[in-house]
Length: 164
Image 1 (cartoon, helix red, strand yellow):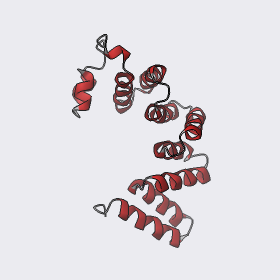
Image 2 (cartoon, one colour):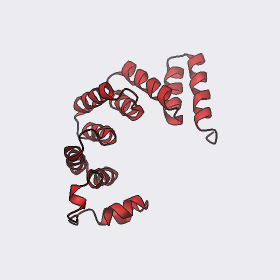
Image 3 (cartoon, helix red, strand yellow):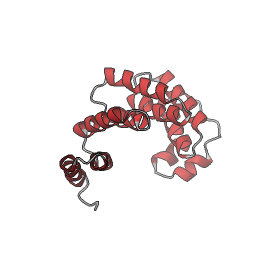
Image 4 (cartoon, helix red, strand yellow):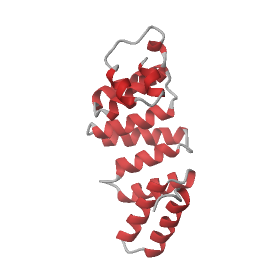
């Protein structure tokens, strides 16, 4: 039932069912644990989210989306390096995993601005994204590179024409 509420985009109802035991079929589904991980993240229950993402990966180790989410949870738990390494390993297997670059950029933001920028650029190359392009525009403007800033502003507008 929790998965149904989650799929129907009723996160508050799904969260209310979070601590009920799953049925026998749900226990075998990596999607069950992935969905729980997402919901637990939204509730900022980082350690519980990590456990659920790891349970999903135990059932389906090659699930990139779960690994991508787990990496950010590790960052929230103060284990940014572990999250970065997890995403680096994933990128080696799946070099077109846009979300891995985007999340690795987020994990690098405070400690490796060049890595942050390179990862966001790669993510935008793979899948244009307004927020990522706007972040690159702000970064370029901050260092006085008006040409790059204007380029990334245009990319953001192209990706999200409805956003001002």
